[in-house]
Amino acid sequence: MCAKINSKDILIETASRLFRLRGYYGVGLKDIIEESGVPKGSLYHYFPQGKEQLAIAAINHTKEIVINEIQALFAEIEDPIIAFQTHIEHLSEIIINSDSIGFPIGTIAGETHSTSEPIRLTCQLAFQEWQAIYMQKLLKSGYDKKRATDLGITVNLMIEGAILLSLTNKSNRPLEVAKKQITILLSKD
Image 1: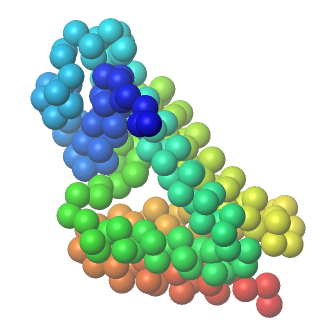
Image 2: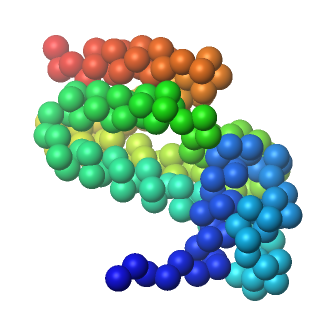
C-alpha cells in the first residue's frame, strides 16, 4: 500500500526540483504553486515564513536523497576506490541521460550565501554531511582520521565542481576526469 503524499511533501519535492534547475532567484512561489498544483493557502499553511522556509525544507529534502543514494552504494561496495568510481559513474549517467537534473544544492548555495544566512547554513550542513559520508567510508577502509577528513572535503569539492562543469559543458568529461583524479588521490601508495 502506497503512502499518501500530502501537500507539504508535494511542495517540498516541487521546490527542490525547481531550485535545482533554476536556482533560488529563478523560482517564485507562484512557479512552485503552479507546478505543484497545491493551493496557495496550503503553501502558507506549511511554510508561513514563505520562500526561504520552503527553500530550507527543499535543501534538506535534496540532501537526504543524496545521502541515501551514497550510503546505499557505499554499503554495497567495500573497496573505497571502486565505491567512489561507481558513485561518479552514477552521477555521470544521470547528467548524460537527463536534460533536467540541475545542480543538487550548488546553485542555491552560490546565489544565497551572502543574502540568506539560514539558507547558507543549511547548504553548509548538507555539504558537511556529504563530506562526512565520504570520510566515514575512508576511515572504515583504513585511512587515518586527518587524511580521511581532508580527502572527504577534497572528493566533495571535486565532485561538486565536476557536476558544475559537466552541466555547463553538456559533457560527462569533467566527471570522468574527477573519477580518474580521485582514484589517484585515494591510492595509499
